[in-house]
Length: 387
Image (tube, rainbow, N blue to C red; front, side, top):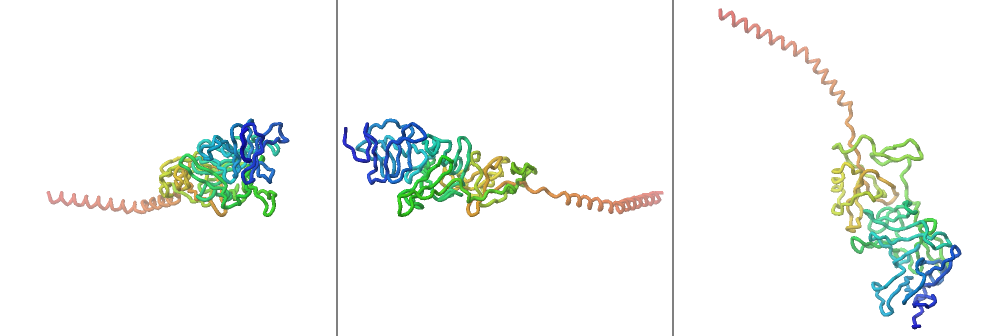
C-alpha cells in the first residue's frame, strides 16, 4: 500500500480523512434513521455534517479532503482543480460551504433536504437559484413552488439577506455562493433543513458551539399585498373572502388609450412565462413594446442573465405572486385601459344642439317665407313691365 498524507484517502484505506489544517474531517457514519452507511464531511470540532454522499459505496484511487471541505478525487501529482476526476462540491446535498457554488447552466446544481433529522436520504425539499428571465432564489416541495425571492438587483436578492452573491461566467453559466464579506468564513454554512427552511449556522464567539440558527427563508420581513388590495387596473373577481383574487378590469385594453400605472417597491411577478428583451434598457422603450402587444399586461426593468445588465421584461396575461416591500423592490408598470369618456358631456351637448335648432327653426321659417314673398313680388313686377 502506498504512503499518503493524512488528508488523503487511497484505495482500500480506512476513512480517517482530516484536512491539512485540521478544519474538516471525512468518514463513514451510520444514521439512526437508516441501516445504510454514508460518506460524510464535517467541521472537525462540530458534529453536524456539511456533506453526505448517498451514492459512493467504495472509494477508489486517491482522494483528498481539502481545507475548504471539498473532498476530491484527483491524480496524485496534479492539484489543478480543473483536472479533478470528481469533487464533492459538484454534488451538493443539503449544505452550502463558503467556497461551494450552486450552478445554473440549464442543468441545475441545487440543495436537497434530508428525509428526516436522522435520515440523510434525499427529502422532498429543494433550494436553488433559477433564472427563467432574471435570477431568483426558490424553494420547492416536490413539484410545488413554495417560495420565490425578489430578483437580483446587482448586489443582493430583493427580499433576502445579503448572505449570497451571484457571479456570471458567461451567458449560459452563473454561480451562487456564500458572500464571505458579510459573514465569518471560519465556520459558516447555509443548510436546507428537512422542514423546508433555509438556515444560516455559525459558531458562537469564543466557543466551539454552533450558535442559534438564523432562519433565512421563508422570510417574514416582506409585506404581502393585503387581501383587500389590488394593483391599479385590477379588481376583485370573487366575493369569497378566503379565495379573493385580483382580475383585470372588464373595461378592456388595447383601445388606443391605454397607459401604465407605476407600482413601486415590488417583487416582480413570476417570470417563467415572461419575455426578455435584453437590448432594451430604458422604461420608455420597454413601454412601447408592451403597448404594441395587446396581451401584454405589465413590464419592468430588471437585471438579465443574458447581459448581466438591466433589460426589459414584459408579462402577458396573469401576473402571479405579486408582493410589495417596505424598503426595497423594483418598479412595475401595470397596463391599464384608458378611462371611458363620460356620457354626460355627450348628452348635454346633444340637448344643447337640439335646443339651438329648435330656437332657430322659427327664424329659419320666417326667413324662407320672406324670401319667397320677395321672389313673388319680383316676378309680378316683371310681368307688369312686359305688358
